[in-house]
Length: 106
Image 1 (cartoon, rainbow, N blue to C red):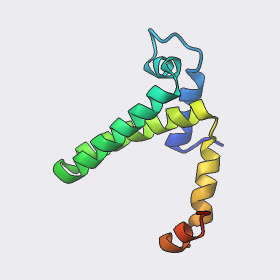
Image 2 (cartoon, one colour):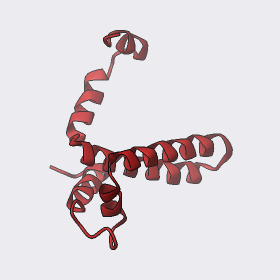
Image 3 (tube, rainbow, N blue to C red):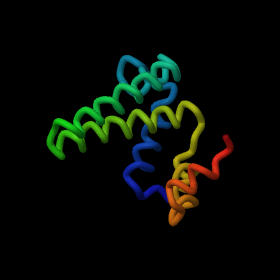
């Protein structure tokens, strides 16, 4: 069931695949390809980090929303299901961040 706002947004993003790039920013991103989408994720991540050290909580929230949107577009383009990300986060719940990182293959 898609009741979380990010799941709902992902469904809208998925629906923009193949849409007219002249009428949809999301379709325009898909049309430009994964490299451009990944670049936008990086840009939005940087803008979020900058806002975190110099802006208001509202500005950080706005930049975070932009970052999450572009990340969801990247997932959709790459075939990553948000449920898989939520499951990975759930798997890590209760595990020390240091222990989890050390358990990853080198």
